[in-house]
Image 1 (cartoon, rainbow, N blue to C red):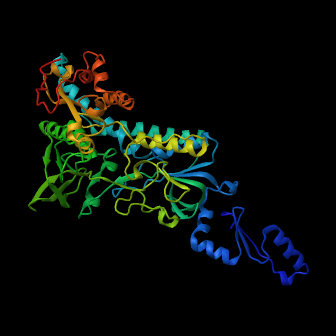
Image 2 (cartoon, rainbow, N blue to C red):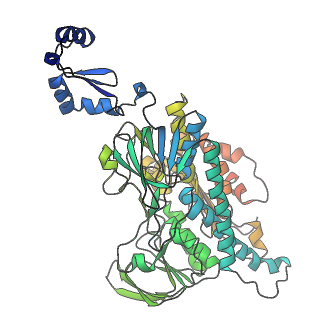
Image 3 (cartoon, rainbow, N blue to C red):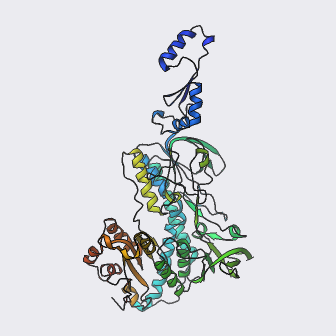
Length: 561
């Protein structure tokens, strides 16, 4: 097989006149006097017995799977990237800039309701981008209700059009899809809108929408397939419910909505739907925002409840039925209480499932090339260089085990990986102190340790928590939501009160957190924070004057700026 650079020298000595001379020549070249003689990538394995032994010990397989430096150009591509999302696109463009032959395979399997989208992945099409734009729509609604207090005379009553909003957002996303295709073309990256599936070592099958199959080989592969929403596997879930994959391009207003789940996706969607004036209920199995600081999570939940969002606690849906067809129709939801098994029922126009996401790793042929995945979660374990247990296969983004599921993390990891592989770099992706923001009605920005994790790692006596409520000046004239915004830092006492956790609940939390994240990466201490002069009058200045510790029980309520 030329693809694997396996060569076998085999002469039928007895049938040739020059048998003896050939035998001597073979011995001179290979130090073997009998055939066959097997070579892999110009490395001699040996005769029949040695080849069988190498196969048994696995060294033959290793030789076949090595990086292939001796291979020359026998592969179709240097790198094939499976998944055209944030991480995959960043990596592919970086590799092409370094002169490599690169292909990207991207294919969106339609949702059970038939929703599909273009190149760019979750973030652009059905994640961060439309989410933030719908969140902004809700914030504008809040600004309109504040406006009369500032002298704006709004008459007649202001209405919102779901159709106008979704059309504008989808048009913008369409322009981004086009931009990504152009960028790949400009960078000389081959793009195929096809589903990638491994069929053997270094070999992949690409199936397009019409079912046409093509096969390609590559020296290296990058798995960047991301995740898709999970379904609870109950009667009616896939037939009648929507997920975040469907919501942002829904051609009708969802009406009275039940959001199932307590993930950040669930709370963000519930928040902006309520902000558009819809009747919204959230059904929660256990805790809000698992993995996030629970003090902050509970404050988010309380704020949402005060603003009209209903919560059904400790409940899971067991059946979804359609009472009436329509856009939207009417659905009957049956649910069970997790503690006493009490059955509850309710009617909604739309049921949005946001109970978590599953990696797209189980149907891409990984088992055919020996790539290990966590059987329970579907996540891929990698080393600190994003390499899987199969040396020529790498993975980045949401499919990674134990790593953050965030777009900028995937982009950073993809670029750095490619620079290490092809650009002589040694810089690895730093997964520590990554800032993030949850775009709930009251935005939540965080960087570093949650309070629970800090106590668990360093012990309660070794950490000091400084905190305070604050009241944005912009909210004082409409006289709303005093003592709802909250700031908290977690300091490690033995290490000069170094800031190891940063948490803020309030408007523009993402903008605030991004700046402080750089300071935390630089190792900022409480003393340095206190010596920083604040900007007045802004929300973020509260972090320069935090004086009350949590353990003191001191008053942290604010009466003004």
